[in-house]
Length: 144
Length: 132
Ligand SMILES: Nc1ncnc2c1ncn2[C@@H]1O[C@H](COP(=O)(O)OP(=O)(O)O)[C@@H](O)[C@H]1O
Ligand SMILES: [Mg+2]
Image 1 (spheres, chains in turn purple, brown):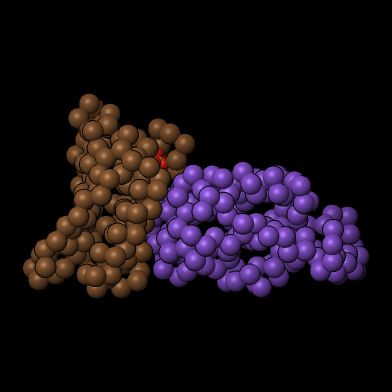
Image 2: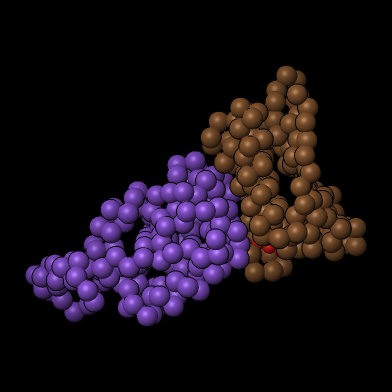
């Protein structure tokens, strides 16, 4: 396996890491994802790492890089499904993952992304923001 | 009982294999999940250093015992350039490459025993031990 599939979910991209990634595969994912964010105008990226039984500093750096890069491209990143043992170990390793938001699962991650998108839409009144936010959610179910 | 295996470390795929074998060893020695995760993560860091900075080498995984306590020990060896200033290399955040500089220091925190022997031109040997 030399590619990690990237799926389009409405206006978000979903990456499910299913294998014990070696470093080159992680680098490939980073590049592929940048291209896909640009090509698809995605507003958010969900990275599901529930299959990963460890996250070391290399994978951690990749996650932080993806988050930083997607922020530049105006997309939010949420890492979902981190196992509790992995989270505990990360703290001891000393990795803080700056700029990486986490959520329990894909569902919660999508909620977080939608909430964030409503927050960051500029120049909206509270009312306008809610209306805009709903529009966005609808759009997520259709095509963009 | 006492057992050991030595695996090559030449590529990023080898790092994955070492992770998997350390996981199996920790499982066999009865480590609980969090302790397994800690020793596998530490091993992953040092295995990668062996490949990237050491120019390749090997990892020896052993089941060990002390005062009736079982544990897993992994010894990483390479004949690479070695480390001139070990104290500096052990600092959180220090890297000579493009890493996060958390491999050595983090692996030390994730192990119960940590030993590093290295000198310029003499290669590097790192030993990690975690007790059950
Ligand atoms: N096996 C090795 N051979 C030579 N130098 C090494 C080795 N392992 C680590 N080093 C040196 O120690 C530094 C710190 O290593 P580490 O804490 O793993 O951080 P990183 O891998 O992010 O650089 C490396 O940047 C490198 O200069
Ligand atoms: Mg390292």
